[in-house]
Length: 483
Image (tube, rainbow, N blue to C red; front, side, top):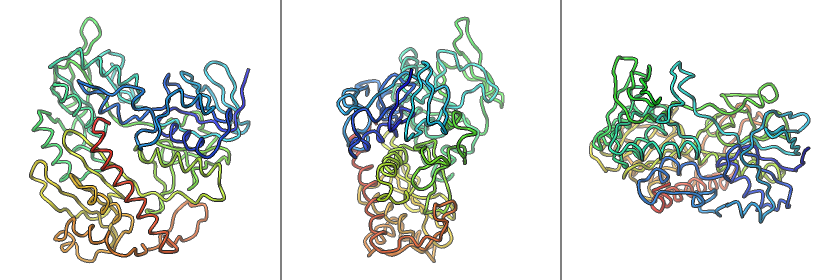
């Protein structure tokens, strides 16, 4: 038993939904496209799970956050897929893949063949057992990666009114879940081994601002240690958490957010892997010309920094999906992906955006000591601004730091940059477009020195794109705080 499709998307996350929309917009015929997902629902906007889905009142629920509402696009409900002739194979996993024969064997025993495959398998949450701690199966131990995880977390919150929660991990998931738990009147203690929260992105000084704000909302922090073991009651629920430093905490629930691992298992030994994901070129094409990879699972060349990176953020997932589809359907009209890494978060009344790279010397501006203040930072590497962060900005200010990071202006005097602060980005964004210096992109399809861009209009296009991202993120944050 088997079916054949021209295009198959393996995975049902954010990038799958955006890829499907792009295929339809580019005229894919009925019956040519198939999405295979082990989830039982059509693709949805995952950021909602740590925000609106966990609200105590008027919580977000499907179908309200199916893709692609996160980018103010159409909402792709199951009805939409049916009307556009896109086959949804839901609640179905894939046991094996053969990229030479272009076939996938599902857990139901069906063989699905394709002409082009897009791998959108995302990543899985690392389990406690992988760190030598047992207890993931306890009903009050929660992860957050998909909607079934979110439902489990909601049940734990509702069964622990006014209770105590321990959040293991100080990254994106840990910080956003902690905020949602506080809103639900749960007492929260965060535990992580790093010296400060969001250690992969934020500097100690910026992280301190957010930690102090969280403390003002009742959150406690225990840093520099990790989970050691659980105590259980007769029903198998966790009652106490013991940390490696000997601290013991009584709990009603535990939320675990300790990194993720890309889902590459089906393709190990068949495709080239790099940085934990599937290595792709600037067209998102893997080492097999018929196979593409997008989203969290893809390690792609970031031109601005001259290296391949694997980015774990919804913005990258959305844009990589659209570019991969364009690469497949109009390869002669599609250039290499040119993307400035972009991250953002909105918790409580706080809202920040970051563009570029957190490498080099850091120059701060604004008041980091006052709650609710506007402040930011620049990262200067080899004499150029390569990254910018802003908390509490206006739409125009976010656009300014986006443009500045895209243009990578030269900086000679860091003291003067600090004095100008946000005004530097505003001034740069208002100047005529200048060309950034050329960068060697390792592993690019051409292998040549890229003069980025060759003409001023290329740079202008990049600036317009960056400004559009900033404007949308600001607008979306104002309208949809829940997501």
